[in-house]
Image (cartoon, rainbow, N blue to C red; front, side, top):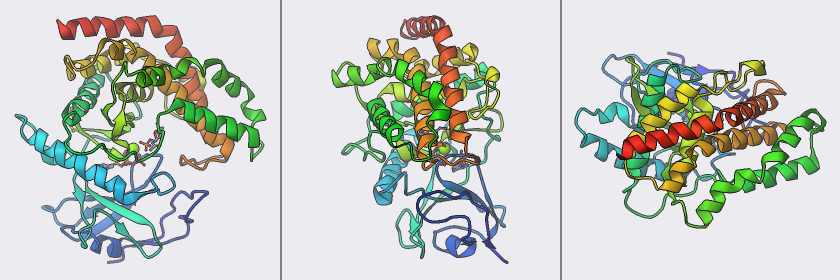
Length: 389
Ligand code: ADP
Ligand code: GN1
Ligand code: MG
């Protein structure tokens, strides 16, 4: 059976040219300790970072698999990246196995090792691949579709922090240095504004002013962290809505995309989830009138999150949860904007203005959050009272 596909993958500006290379899935498949016979392979999902393929197997009793070509522009040290993921998944598996009614096979990612025992494979072109067991799930939406689903998502991401609180051993590796350090992203932004390599600055004039007007306010979490007022925890750091799988009945099933699990503040997980899941539009919506902050989804998510972390968070952490949603709309928008100005080097894009459009959606969302901010704060404080009393 022919398993060599000339897949039309998205080309990155840096690194290997991925458009023209044939991927020999049969050969790749043979490099991992997999069961079954590969039947088909197709590009899968809508992640912005890796190239992801779903490999279906012929036999009914064998799993299907996710194969990923790891983006080494973003994750430079693959052995350390995979070491983190193995530690995290092994710990989660032990803890989830001990919970009643839980199903560790589907609730935790399973890394399939290479035939040489390593948790990845490096091909002849130098590209790194990894493999997970495919978890059957409900087709993901771009946004949360009901307060009940938001509650499920909040519960799962809250539980994730709770379960990892006692991870033994040394701190996890920082897989992307300064990943959620807004000062770092502001510095990168200033640098790219100065060089303006593609002369895109003029097209983004209003967006640049928008960022400058809010940059001081956005340093608040970093300041609290440096002062030791909010603690570092083990956080997921990429709690985008499509990084959670739901089962066919709509229940939160499994948290995926563990590349950025490392020390962080609780706000990183809460804020990113809200800006991605509670936006009433797509992340790259062209009609900004459709962008909105869905307060009912916010309330559902916040309830699930706080209920699964009872008594864990300190008052200052809780008080800043609503703010963290604004921070993430700002910071993710800023990263999209910087990437647009730099020439689309980081996020996958399908058109030249794609990152600018994404940035504008985040900034509009931030304006919507600013309008609803009092309400968001009241919801969190009301829930905090309920969940601690
Ligand atoms: P990226 O960093 O590019 O977002 P992800 O690890 O999130 O990469 O994977 C991309 C997509 O692939 C996910 O959004 C999800 O749809 C799908 N996916 C990844 N791992 C699995 C898995 N083990 N089972 C089912 N689907 C998966
Ligand atoms: C990326 O990998 P993915 O698509 O789940 C990015 C996040 C951004 C998000 C914006 C490692 O998430 O930080 O918030 O795009 N992940 C990385 O959609 O940079
Ligand atoms: Mg992802």
